[in-house]
Amino acid sequence: MTKKNSLNAIEVQCLRVSLGLNQAQVAQITKATEEDVQAWETGEQLIPEVAQKKLLEIDDIIEMQVLNTCDGIESLFKSEPKRRLSFVVYPTQAIYTQYNPEFISSLPFTELYNTSTWRIKKECKLVLEVDVTLVSFDVDSYKAFREQEGLGESRENRAKWAATQI
Amino acid sequence: MTKKNSLNAIEVQCLRVSLGLNQAQVAQITKATEEDVQAWETGEQLIPEVAQKKLLEIDDIIEMQVLNTCDGIESLFKSEPKRRLSFVVYPTQAIYTQYNPEFISSLPFTELYNTSTWRIKKECKLVLEVDVTLVSFDVDSYKAFREQEGLGESRENRAKWAATQI
Image (cartoon, rainbow over all chains, first blue to last red; front, top):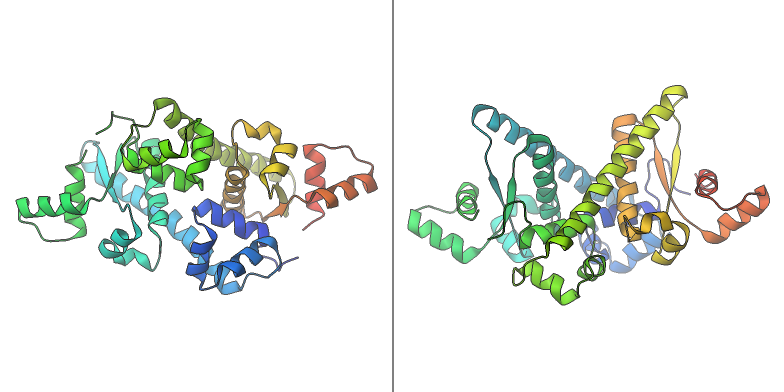
């Protein structure tokens, strides 16, 4: 039996699976060991409140990011005709860490960021009838594009590159 | 480049991760090999349309299950005061397969079912202010409960057992 509002063992597991994370990743996020995470999920060990909070926070951040981004796209498309959109996603943790460091503290793994963008794609299609294409970030192709266009490195310019990929 | 409305390589990966599945599970669902799934996600091989359809279908089923269940709970609670609710989740694939066979064809893995129940829990909290506790199905405890209460095996009776666990 756990405290009210506290996650029980199976809920921690369901939350982890719904985030698309493995036990090693949860251990890293919560600064625990893989053995700890295993013990939380079998109920042999209580999940520290701070670890629960961290995981629930990530769940909420993804939800908020989906809502906010879709809202932003909706207002953008009030003033111009609907069109295709592209979103950059990061194929490896190394590339994600290097190019998207502002997200590392809130969504520490590229899988979390990609889950979020998948849901944005879905929501845009369903609610806004906007086609979002996820574009895997390709460092070489992006560098060539920047050189050709005389652009610096920025999130905005990554988006411009991604637009050329659909 | 893929056809319009068709998933590209990174999108297949994002979809898989957002479903909480590994490549072996996607292979099983789509009747492909793990090597195939790997090749889809790196872009070395096009994803057969039937495989895409299957994965997108699962994504939709989860969404529908969350919406429908929350709607059902909302109408239930219009006529009675809000209370705590429990939902059975299945800790292993073997138990899931044995006790929940009606879901196997739509949500073949217990992880998918559990992702769905996690999202129901979240949505109920957020929208309906109803506390849902996920209860890991315990075969022995359930059998003892049925014996004691003189009950047969049914989904309804599993729910009754789960209610005793919170």
